[in-house]
Length: 292
Image 1 (tube, rainbow, N blue to C red):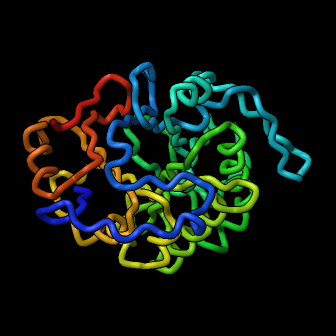
Image 2 (tube, rainbow, N blue to C red):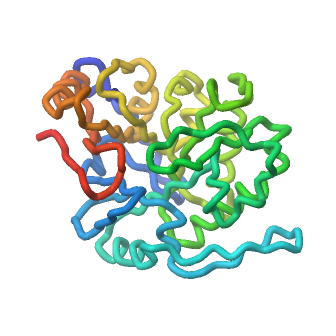
């Protein structure tokens, strides 16, 4: 479970001087408690929420041609939720766009050809995307597809996203490559630098990977975190640096035979969890629940 503290709400740390705040969104713990994540159909963003996490390719407002400088531009089609960002912004909601920074779907991603076959790893076992595979995030391999990664992040800015959910950024074991700690850390710092660059200036969240919160550079680099399936475990020490730094940590837990709402909510109460959300693994609009 992603916890604010073990047994209480825990400290959130002092806020930096306003004059030193960056121009991108930086959510504090509990400030966006009313949120939802919908990455797969069916979609329904009519609910009044403070924040939605949606897939970048689904919310592109119009067909967009991206030039990679190699003479082979790629056109990304308008998404099935092409009007979602404008509508949600009209209601004052924050839109976090899920950007797959460490995996691709070779069959459906418009830019799949920009990721060479040599850097593709094993299947991610995503229950909602049977063809999704990891890509090699190590520094030497990343040089062959860094342009595609940068363009995905720039596309999020162009689409109007307020922030990036950096999905599949954690690659320590079982991805088809040997990714040591220093290479994983380098990847975290690289993608956050792209999001915070002068031409993008987007907030970015760490998806899973909270074992890296013991590293001050990683904590400082990200603006918030999103973690999945943590209600059955205790990981207060891992996420405390994020919460202590005043950074929101959004937890997604999956209801089912192995986890009831009662058990999840008890874990949240015991740990002072402020931003927990109960879904099913389809991550659609079909299931959304919160603890009272």
